Length: 236
Image 1 (cartoon, rainbow, N blue to C red):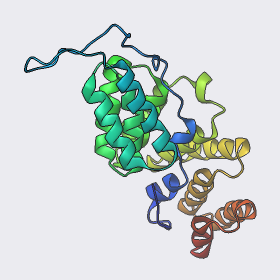
Image 2: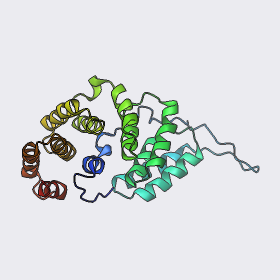
Image 3: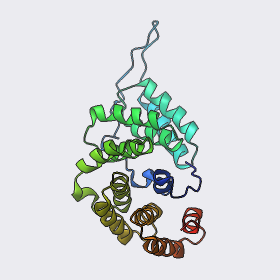
């Protein structure tokens, strides 16, 4: 997804402009083929049943390849085709949802994540991506509720997670918690743009512009040509 440089007034977009949900994505635990070579679909109108597992696998693999190349609309088409052949192949849904998310189709992505979570309600990475979608739609409380239920042991040293969780705390007015999480995110990943921008915004909210300036200067030293950082520094 492409983002425009958005200044302090767009805190949600500012934070998530640097946020890459895909960077914490891993294949769901049930990606292994669920349809065996002896399985078949019962087709209407008297057509002969056929084994669809190979075709589904090919569509799914090609869709993932296209998604990695940034050809998101083509990937969505292939995911749609694969799922239409067998709706039991739920491993398609999170990748399809991620592609829709990156196209800016947040409600579509949310619906796909929800459909997957009916069968796999504790899949942490899909829950995380669902929370990101909710935040884009302005449902910060709902997103924070999901994030709060994820086990700390799995996420405590994930900079992207901490940056996002800190952003949600910031939006919900929990500034002390937000500051701690954002600082920890930057300790783990010094060039985390989301954490830097949100922390600078937080200091602006606390009427501490000098601290905001320090945060942005430190970030710009690592990424001197990043327009989000430069533009935000320019409005201090």
